[in-house]
Image (cartoon, rainbow, N blue to C red; front, top):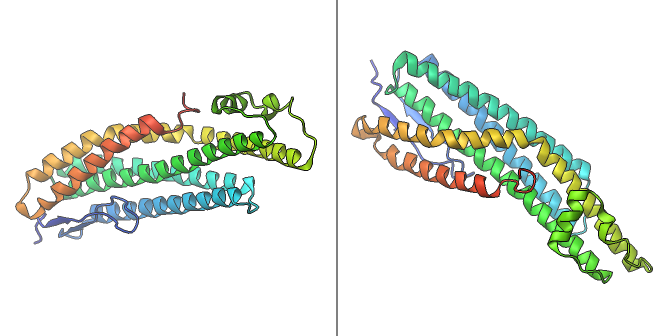
Length: 276
């Protein structure tokens, strides 16, 4: 007979810095444990695919500002893929949370299999938040770059504009609200104003992408709220077990610290314009 006390939790996914806790447990061929690991594997895969899509988006944005021809349609397609994968991850996380609740009812809160389910859920939720926060950062960085380029192009034609004026342009949806009086004679002026129009359209497309994923970020905010109390509960349960798994306390403590930072970042930074 194998004892439930032989549980070992290991650190982070060093390659991706995703705080996924891997668990090696000696249990009696537990179907519940197999289900947990199957769920975790699927969620982790989707999180990694989101990270890859965010990387592609950053590359597309960089190419645009370095003179390489890129398509807004491509960026919109990447955004749609990220949204679809994020919705899938949220659904899977809800399933995993439901599994953890059932295990707690069946085996008790202090059983190894329940602790594994809770820890996997908490850490995968953390990894999901980090991936989506990277997406947030990519879109907001692109937004600021578009605004800066609009200001530079307007300077070229001798019409300086402030960041507040650019925000007004975005809000009203009319790129020409401060360019109507600009003299467009000469190739340089025409090219500059053409760039202004393109960057404005890019900003409108970006705003549309952000609004389409608004609900997902609200769900992520709820995840952040949930994880604090959950990680406290996991840590308290681990403290009641044998010394063989006390090393997990440091890692869970680190996860709690990460969630505290994530909560602050989410409240301060995520899409301040569109969520105001």
